[in-house]
Image 1 (cartoon, rainbow, N blue to C red):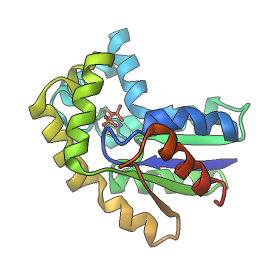
Image 2: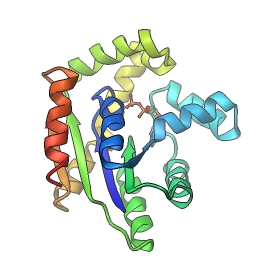
Image 3: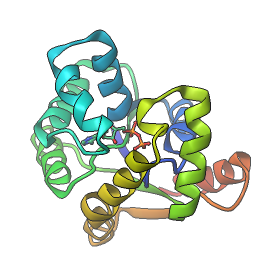
Image 4: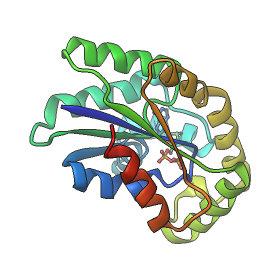
Length: 191
Ligand code: ADP
């Protein structure tokens, strides 16, 4: 099995390119954000716990998302691999993923990182708010907190994966979606 991570700040285009990559390489796309939003929509206890944190631009607890990923690995079989989007987002999550894979005799294939500047994050998320209606996209203060959370808690993963020779960075800006798609595929084809 192949295990790819799609990495990058909020609004970098992870979801957009995930769909294409999943099809091209026969991967199951797993977005922890989308899974959490489904829990919220279903009104589960987990959803209720996550809702307030997400509305505040904070992360949900590591053990919650790790359990979601483990469950996906246990239940999804008919694919050539996984494309994890929005996970891991902290060093403890990355360590949990490493041990999860190790226990299964598997390892990470590569990290595909989409980079965009902070100003562009605001522009894109505010644009997306009008289309997708996500509450955490509609408020400037929440966006700003998510960017802060990204820089403090998620960005250290760049060095973590760079040190392991797994990190591949792609410019998510400037350029059209099609331009970025070509860049992403050119990189993933070489991994
Ligand atoms: P974006 O890429 O715009 O940040 P996501 O859909 O990936 O959107 O995530 C939305 C929210 O869900 C995050 O702001 C965070 O609160 C929560 N979340 C998603 N993935 C994780 C994770 N791996 N760890 C903790 N919280 C997460």
